[in-house]
Image (tube, rainbow, N blue to C red; front, side, top):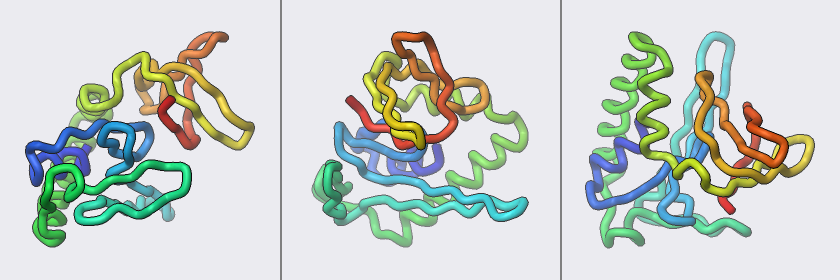
Length: 157
C-alpha cells in the first residue's frame, strides 16, 4: 500500500493496480515491485519503481512513470514520500492489524473475477482472482472451488 500511495501522491494522474503479491501494474505492464525477506525477527524490504526508465524483461511488459505521463518525480523526493507512506502503513498495521490494509489493498487491486495464472513449485494453476483471505493470501477460484495461495508467481490472463 505504501508504494501504491507514494506513486499516486507523487504522480496524481497515474493509474496503477496492485497485482498480488508484490507488483504495481499500469494496464498490463509492470511499473514497480517489492521484495521482502525475513531476517530473524526483522523483515528486509526492497522497493523497485520504474520512475524514468523500465528494464527490458523477456516475456513481461514493463513501463515507467515517464513513459506513462511524460515526466517522473525526482528519486530523492519520491523516496521521502515512500518513507512517509511506509511509516503510516506500519503504524496502521501495528495499531489495527491487517483488516484495514486488506480493505485498502482490495480497493486498488485488479477486480475480483480477473483471470490469473499462479506458478508455484508444483506447476501452474489458472483461475479467477477472488480476493484476499484474512491472512493476506490470494483467493483463487478454480473449477474445483476456491483455493488459498500463500506463495507463487502470479500473472494476469
